[in-house]
Length: 214
Image 1: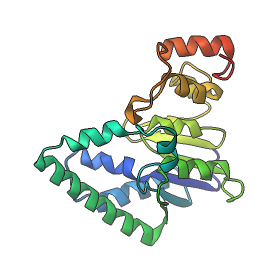
Image 2: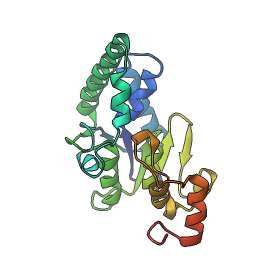
Image 3: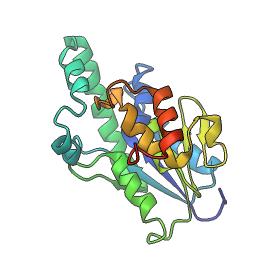
Image 4: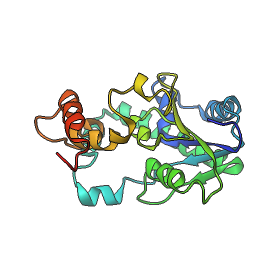
């Protein structure tokens, strides 16, 4: 990716979980320093923070059980776990307040961070953005990887780009959306096609080219 006119787009809640997994509830300054350090490392002149505001309303209209597995998991929390999660969310919200004082924070009711990032990527020329560095450990964000757009995972410490795509995936980048449709997404409680796992999906896509042709 060229170093001119770069924009850092942060998956806000996803990055916050870095500190939740460490059991920290006073991470706001560490969070901001991390974002600024990443922007400096990638020579990004602009920073955009994308944050969820509730669950995706349009996804729930298509699939009412979308992310129901997460709600079920949270419903089974102990009182201690519930309190710890509330403290985490409170710190996260305060972090967003501080970030918004310095950078552009985008948050829309019923819209998730990846949808906001997708909109920016799709219309990057309109917004005069040439190159984008996505910060998220969520592989769903690889759906946005293209020329001039890469993802960095703070968990694996790896970059996913058009150039190194096949170091991470056995399928072509153009087939990734169809691949995800076929295998589903357990993390989001989205079922795939019965009897089709990753290997079968790759075989079918190699034979037919896309999910539309299968």
